[in-house]
Image 1 (cartoon, one colour):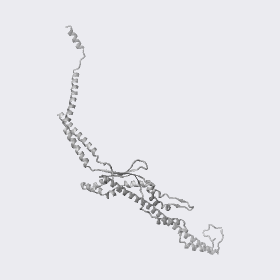
Image 2 (cartoon, rainbow, N blue to C red; image 1 turned 30 degrees about the vertical axis):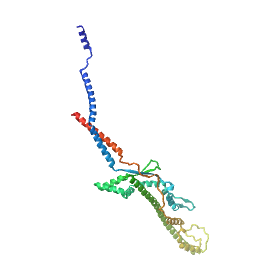
Image 3 (spheres, rainbow, N blue to C red; image 1 turned 60 degrees about the vertical axis):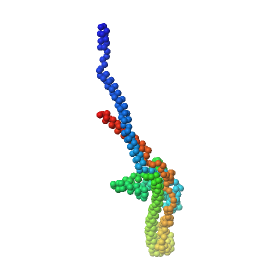
Image 4 (cartoon, rainbow, N blue to C red; image 1 turned 135 degrees about the horizontal axis):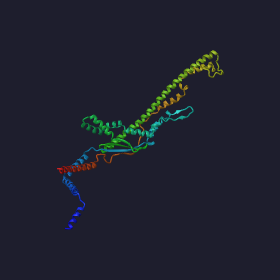
Length: 385
């Protein structure tokens, strides 16, 4: 009896544990137990749905492989070029420099002012940049593609399948323009350029790039000769204009001098001055110090002048330059190059696209993920039910 009051007292003094604490512990225990069960169920659901996952993966893998094997192939042939050296354009340089005397200025004291008008025509950097510009020109690409049998076959097949042939043709040309590229290897001034031509087969890309390069090279050469011819024609027209002006000035001077001499002759006869005399009137308008006989001879001489170079010596230089232009001819058959190969045109080793291995792997992964997603969605709905 004495122990009971003491026990009751201890129980009363002991801390009271809320009832919710035990309930919470049971909740968390149940929750952890539920999570473990859900994870097991998840793996079980994946295992039960393994056939769906495998089937989806196989279907996508087969579709990816089929697409990779049947998709349009694209191959790129390439070459690397840089600006030409002096030896590459030596023949063209000779054609240009033969006209150098026509552009030089010959002064009365015998010195010659060398003109630089022809220097740009034989500048290797300028010639190379014109070649690259012609290579990247849309007009050059269109002209080449219009003459390409392979492109025309490709275009005709596309036109048959397209609803709007005109829009389809424009898009096709734009797409193929992007397959013909010349890009600088770096940003330096004398950077080499990588030339590329992409086509549907390994051999055709090689042939098309070779043919396109040949055509661009011929065009660049013709442009170089045409530029030279244009500069020469411009100089010839300039010399003809100068000659006309100088001849007009010479004729006017001749006419004026003849009239002055006739007036002086009349004055000399009136003054009875037949023989030369010494006078101090050096600046007199109608000088009679020569005498009437000399003035008569001078009038006859002025009237008989046919060669205006006697009056204007600069006409001799112009006539000499025009004769040279009429004699010299441009030989368009000389061989030269506006670029130099660093790497010759080579057929491609591997295709650009499709990347068959990558497509197969990505298709397989996509199929596997889709299969897993299907199984998980089914599991989620079944659990809710």
